Image 1 (cartoon, rainbow, N blue to C red):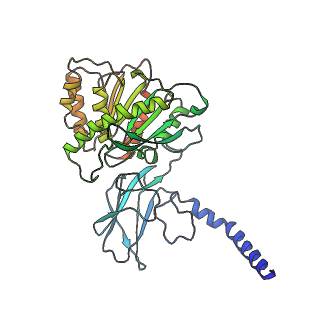
Image 2 (cartoon, rainbow, N blue to C red):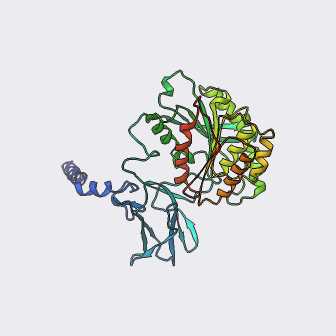
Image 3 (tube, rainbow, N blue to C red):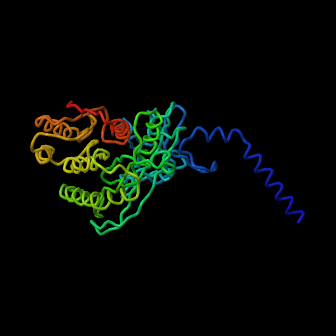
Length: 388
């Protein structure tokens, strides 16, 4: 017993010395994506105080390793040391959240050292964050926070089990008030968790509310994929069928579920709809065809097979009763011409709208900012959109 007690005392003493080592705390504090254990053999990604980022991968038999992400500059080649560890440093990067992956001898993989993986139908993207000083709109800040709820439901329209996420504003649980709602859609390959895990929609809403830049609202984020085929094989026909089936699920299953579960102002003046890429095509297509349900319609980097046809079908009389029709796209986005065609078609019908052409490409750093631009425009009684 004495020997056991002595060994335990010695172990406790050594542990205390280790825990009080100030050098260890300082080393870990400089990493925003560091693993929780100090003795991990490899740290990747490592975000440095100067906003450069170092990537590492142990692959002694690989011939070539590259890393590419949502930052400017394209792919970077990693170099291998004598122990078989490949590494490269990029940046400095602007404060943001970036998706990225490795390519090892032509095979794209996630970073095995990074536990943060983008929610997708086929997981292939790791994520890192470069924090801002002061914090950016999408970062967690010391303000009141809302709640993100996850719902599983059976879609009668699709005959399948489905899932969606819902954000309720700060104080919802203790309030008896009713709120307007925003339906927010993700892009192709993503899922209903992507807007909160990667897009940080909940923090954007929290921070806008704290700044008194937006009104309290409930945000509904459904799964935009109505079919369960191969997520890497996409065709125009599949997209068209998916939009139709997703619309059925939204109108007949999702909206009734939400309006029977949450306290809502259930009328068109208090419903908004927007999405990105595939989801932007869904939000514009559904929103413009169902203006009896949505008075606020938007799209980000939207994929529309035929903008002119959509406008002709939805505005046959060159008259709009929308509170707001807003869409945006980056100048370097592969879909920018799609957005320009939509704006041109709307102008030809004298339909009031706001088209925002910005810097940027088809990526999440752009879409987070768009959500921050769109939410303050919603549910104002005096909104008077203009054609731009």
